[in-house]
Image 1 (cartoon, one colour):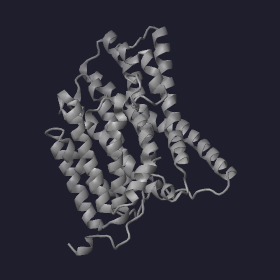
Image 2 (cartoon, one colour; image 1 turned 30 degrees about the horizontal axis):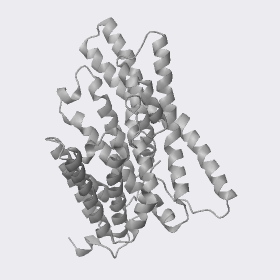
Image 3 (tube, rainbow, N blue to C red; image 1 turned 135 degrees about the vertical axis):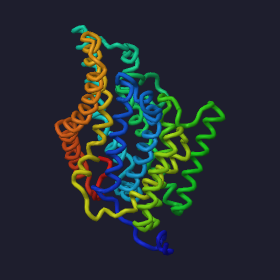
Image 4 (cartoon, rainbow, N blue to C red; image 1 turned 180 degrees about the vertical axis):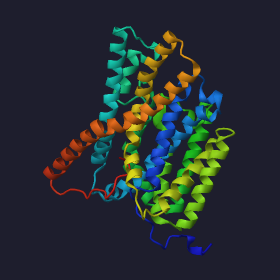
Length: 383
């Protein structure tokens, strides 16, 4: 391999839609759906096939958090770092990107529980719909040590944690921009290891097992690592051929170690290598299908749990009343997974995207009214 395979003297490819970064977002969102649905079949997939279907949740969440830091750093790092976008505007933009869809899903679950109970379809596990848990989740503060947030659309804890990461984004950005790419990467990795050791020493468990109530402290080191990976991607050229080899090898390595156990730290190394490789491969022939799938990934994440609750709330009643055979139960399970995908695409097209179009228009008018505006990013992978 020529010495120019890794170099700080060559121009790195810009972030762009329709490539491997987009594909990764859709793949991870799809696997999150499968993870959330795996226990709803006649036999949990973790028992029928492999424990990875159960323990994979922590891995996918880690991937999601690291990827979020990576993408946001590459998309907004320049404008926030130069002052063209203020920290307040960045936080507002990110909050408005995630909160409307989240609130709609929470209110939808509330309506589902109330109406279902009124017509005789009360939840089989009412403890997951305790009303005292709802306020913190509705306000997206459940990962900041605020009581509540269990049950309902429980996976939204990671969105709550990301709000804390968005708040810290400008300060992390300032620190990372002051150091070289290798130093940034080593420092972020060291901080994660330090956080992991602190939680082990003080609490008795690794940082990825932090309770949802303190989820921001789990998310922040991973988000920071993603930002450091972005700094490395922007400043260090990696030859596309080498990037492809590294990406495939890291994906195989990740699948291999997960076949045996969590192996959390080595898995994070593989995730980081996959992201670095994806970012180093130029998008010469962008795929509109991949781009569309990536844009829908947020809707897939925020809607799949309500769809699961609604679908199996009906299916479980049918199974109990009609004594449906196992084969039919598996068929209904597969239809439920398909329904989660279909609902996400429909929700994105008919609800989330129209709302975001209105928000973008309002933000544009707001910037215009305030005078000179920041140059917006050419592309937004975050959706």
